[in-house]
Length: 404
Image (cartoon, rainbow, N blue to C red; front, side):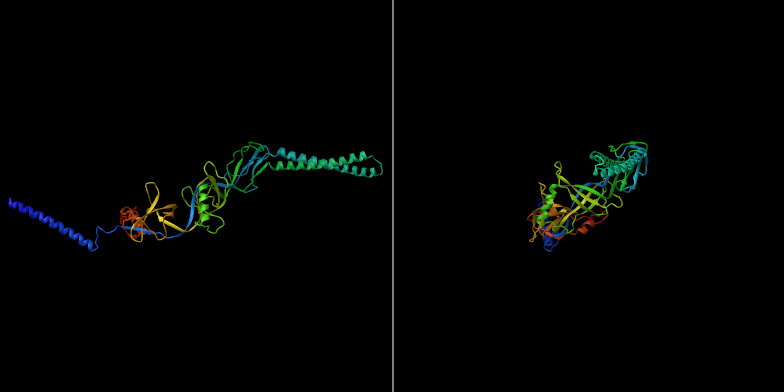
């Protein structure tokens, strides 16, 4: 029994000595600066500095032709010929259709004949009026006879004027039998065929011509965003870039950037009461006719320049339970502080912060889950290039611990 108790005592003593030696070893490592458990956690920070940023707004809309003309007949008749190819480019004045001109040619010839007869009659009436004017002076004819001759002369001259007007009207109607293109542009499909009866002023157009170089892009903007932009301009937060008209870039339906820039033409003055928005019209050159009427596009409009913009990486901004944006910074004493932010918009992969931060603040972008407000932290510069390289597909390096 004594031997058993002695062995038990020696076992307990050995365990106590081993624990003491292990504790002493860990303390020595901590004193030598090797991974001591009591040191502050390491976090990656980005130092916020003011920079010049061009403020843009993305708005969606649709394209519309610069000019559009619906071709309709101005006289009635049977369509005899069609001179254009559907979908081709036409120039103003090109003949598109021919209406049967027979009846209009006859009307023109008849009007010219009536005019010639009126001009022939007026000669004898004028001579008679001149003779009566001489005779009435010597009382050879009565005043009534002279007045009748003078009235007949004026009537004959009026008939000549009416004849000329009739000839001109008949000539115009005859010319209208050849339907010409009112504008230059791309012509669409023909809605009538040869042999069809067309009437003057009919509701259905024969075809449509659209000019698409240049081309309009109509986008909608909310009135609230316009008021916010005006306030920013008035306060000096935004400044114009010195150009007379805003530059506009375009993204096609598949996200491809359009190679040419557009210019703002006008801003509508009427706000739609149902949507609270108004129309912006932008003109884009379209020499290759890439843009077609009715296409859905997105525009990037330059609103102004912020000379003192504060940008923070998006991974450095989190949200509280109410959804309000906040950030953690490391102050000059090496302690973590929480800042409530006001974020204006995203620019690339960063937030544009309008309030809550100041120049020189060190915002934590990695390791936020390892610290809390008021606790000490060791700040190291954030290396975005290495972070992207380690996150690239096929990279052997693993992402840094604490990435948010």
